Amino acid sequence: MNTVAEKSSTGLDANIAAAISYIPIVGLVFVIIEKGSRFVKFHAVQSLLLAVAFFVLYFALTILGFVLGMIPVLGIIVSFALIFVYLALGLGGLVVWVLAILKAFQNEKWKLPYIGDIAEAQSANL
Image (tube, one colour):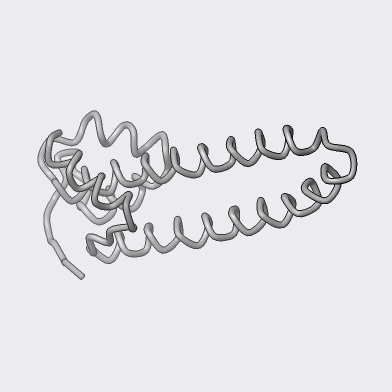
């Protein structure tokens, strides 16, 4: 739990800018325009990577469902099971997203597994 107290180059407090950067379009804007705060850059990059990860997961599940859905009996079973997988992924994604927003708002540099390490390395290069 690392805490920081700084201002964003956008004029916002760093915790506010980091929290709103979890809105994907806003995160992209902060990646582009943020010049001073490594805290804001980290959360902006992490938010974009989180959005990409969920997009890829949903896309892969959709392709899997489409391909397996063509098999006569198995397709019905897989399609039914995928409904619950989509719901679990959506609910899990919502929980992670809200937690990330809250941690950013509380001035914590909360790193998600795998994504956080990549975000830290990429935000240092921006």
